[in-house]
Amino acid sequence: HAKADGRGTFRFFEPAMDEQLHARRLLEADLRKAMANGEFELHYQPQINLKANEITGFETLLRWHHPERGPIPPSEFIPVAEDTGLLSTLGEWILEQACREAAGWPRNIHVAVNLSPVQFRSRGLVQSVSRALAVSGLAPERLELEITESVLLQDNEATLSMLHQLRRLGVRIAMDDFGTGYSSLSYLRSFPFDKIKIDQSFVREMSQRADCAAIVQSVASLGANLGMPTVAEGIETEDQLRRIEAAGCTDAQGYYFGRPRPARDLVHTLAALRQPTEVA
Ligand code: C2E
Ligand code: MG
Ligand code: MG
Ligand code: MG
Image (spheres, helix red, strand yellow):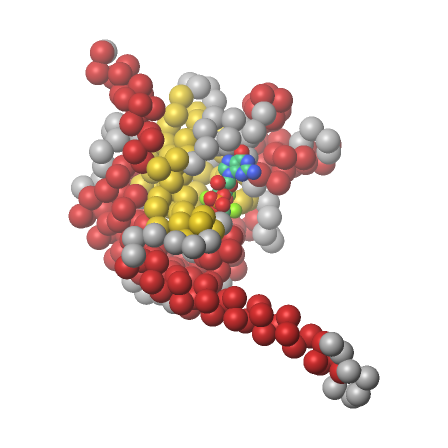
């Protein structure tokens, strides 16, 4: 309870802040143990080429199943992993695991892996990627790395040089959550991405807001002019699908096509994909 003395206001806020800090420390401690306890799992969400109406690849999405709290969303624990340095180990595990899993998929199917800006700040990223490719035997062109504009905000030569080194390994680079950061256009000039992913916030509001529809359309034609495929994220309805197709997006991803699932649940989906090539 706040007291009527000079420090009252501080006292009023203290317990809440203490609690937040405490919760954060607990999460940190649990995260440290999670890796060793095998509490992380990778889920994969299909990406669809609209022209062929076929799955072309899957995006890897990290899941943490906390022993007491159950599933905890990446938005809650990834920032903590980034701040505590845990993400470097975790990031290497994700890369290697995703590449190993994808190596068993049909050869025309790619796997996309999200990279945190923190991974770009450490020197070892290029080495981690090439090691993951080597141990898994996955062809480099089947690995796609998703980065956000915040990676390029760190700007500088070092980041660009890393992107070029990754490209030289033969992997593809996709710009994720396009449109949510700053100066997106200048980034497209400083580095040639292989793909642009339009953030789901624009897709979600396309039907209600003309400006969002206009943005999606502009990005799609920008992509077309630069020779970059454009993926619309977060497609949940047929109406949204029709709108992004009309806008000129080349690819799509979202619950409408499939939710992120563990690799073992993809067996039938992958078998169905494999069929046409084997029959032919
Ligand atoms: P993102 O890379 O933009 O991933 C797309 C997010 O949208 C995922 O959330 C996915 O589950 C969700 N999503 C897909 N389709 C739909 C849809 O139709 N509707 C809605 N409402 N959502 C959809 P998720 O898995 O919670 O991941 C959130 C963010 O956490 C990711 O955004 C990414 O930035 C980060 N993240 C996830 N996994 C990893 C990882 O392995 N490494 C790193 N560094 N970051 C990751
Ligand atoms: Mg992504
Ligand atoms: Mg995204
Ligand atoms: Mg995102």
